[in-house]
Length: 428
Image (cartoon, rainbow, N blue to C red; front, top):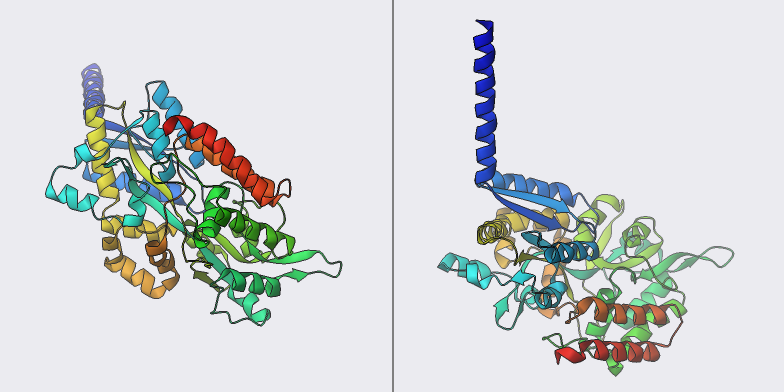
């Protein structure tokens, strides 16, 4: 009797295992590379989205793989592509579009957009975000983790310095003047609090675009084949950044991207430039009243857009691509785009997201969350070219050479131009 019970238990167990195996086989696997590069519990939010999607779509298994910084993620994605085992989808920088096309690593989304609803979805994103998502009449990236650079300021430190805490600088001249008043030194003459801090590691070219754009310069053409680093307006913008350091109102040399929010929390900097993707992090950790404003202008207002797009990898199966497309459509719907913006500080990628009850309520209670969105009409595409990694490195190296005093801004930009022209010769 006992033996029969044991056999029945074994058979039942085997059936369960077989059933589970068949269910696993029936699922379409969607490995999904995701870059964790900024503050906040972003991985938890992504895990939550993946779990909710799989509940609604049990035949699809989405597996988020946290791959490090954006830079590390594209290296891993391209290495996997070359070995024939790429992710099905990945969030990578919008500026990686030309590189991914050149590597023949991705497919455009247009072939998946079939119904009227699909078309309405694709046309529903902010036009500023599509500047880095389309080329050659095709859509290669879908905006998701998108941003602009914004300015944050400590209202208490403004008051202390005799400045109106509700009136941030709106021009280059005001920024320098206010930063001078906000800079503090100890008895030995050492600076304990800088008036302004613009990071120059990690994404120097991106932060520099807040200066080149506001000085009326565009760094690259929209086909990614030509750059204008030696434009006098670009050199003048870099000279302004260098001069802030020389005036002692901005930290000298290269300023770390990753520690800039922390320097703000610790009152080592009164004004900082960073991504709107740091908004939730700053709101939770600042411990003081702060403001969020658009980037101060010179000849014009403006900021580059930034952040990541979803891409579909070419070497995955048609079933996997279709499943990933379904997930990308699902995660960028207005309700989820709204929740993502609330949870992280990134800009919700469509006007429809700002019409959701959740985001309406959030922005009415916390108006700074609208600043990055309101800056979109004057925003430009984030710098991007063919052979993007190496061209961007030439620019970054030039910026850092000028900021450390190794070269004059003019020499640094002429050298960067020369190197970029060499790299882009084959694409013209």
